[in-house]
Amino acid sequence: MAAKIIDGKQIAAEIRAELKNEVTTLKAKGITPGLGVILVGADPASMSYVTAKERACDEAGIYSDDNRLPAETTEEELLALVDKMNNDPKINGILVQLPLPKHIDEQKVLLAIDPDKDVDGFHPTNVGKMVVGDKAFLPCTPHGIVQLLMRTGVKLEGAEVVIVGRSNIVGKPLANMLIQKSETGNATVTICHTRTKDIAAHTRRADIVIAAAGFPNTVTADMVKDGVVVIDVGVNRVEDATKKKGYRLVGDADFEAIKEKASYITPVPGGVGPMTITMLMYNTVESAKMAGK
Ligand code: GUN
Image (cartoon, rainbow, N blue to C red; front, side, top):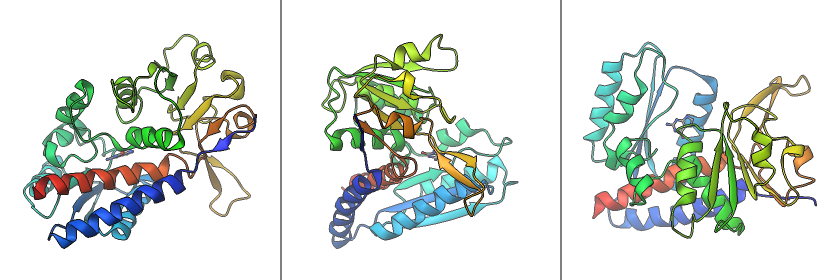
């Protein structure tokens, strides 16, 4: 079977068009959704994510307050900026780009964000609400993955889903979303990680495999069954002298080999990536709607 490619750019563009309409309606009521973005340091991957977020907000008509701080910024200075944004009515969502430099306590910073402005969905209040199935800001990458699956028509109810990777940003929240008693859930979920005895034994029986481990070739063709749906969350740079930049981006799954076996697969880039930013904008618009009520 030759897989159909799930076009994340296309699905993201559809949702962004819906959001742009919502922003136009909100602006007519005098409400402009606003996102505060904080980047500490100059990690190249983080810088390109943040630039892409700012550009996407601009295109959708969302105001963005961009703050690029030096790597030596203190925890106190960062907390003071978060506090300022918590109290700024123009800001509906606050995004502190992770990872933060080692001298800053990441959990302390995430806890300082007003849960009503936590558009990343990382605050324990929102994580707790998500787990019990209450309305909450959902973390953007897993929420984007659920949207990709839903909008592609992949059946989740009763599906065997195996997630490879247990991060707080992807694996753990995605598992929680997919087991909810709802039309975007009802799946049977297994999480594999570095201490799993035999990852392939799990992935081979999966209807849907989510590759979110952070290493190229974590999921190979011999590890999946015919007709599997593979969602690749990885973004890894591998050296490639034929490219101008000297590297190319690959995911965590062996795309070329798996696409001969799968029913659907996401490419890297152009799969999950565009969805993450889109769901961030979705949360910011939702937050503006709540604040405007
Ligand atoms: N670093 C990698 N992914 C994310 C994300 O979704 N949000 C934030 N704030 N930082 C990240």
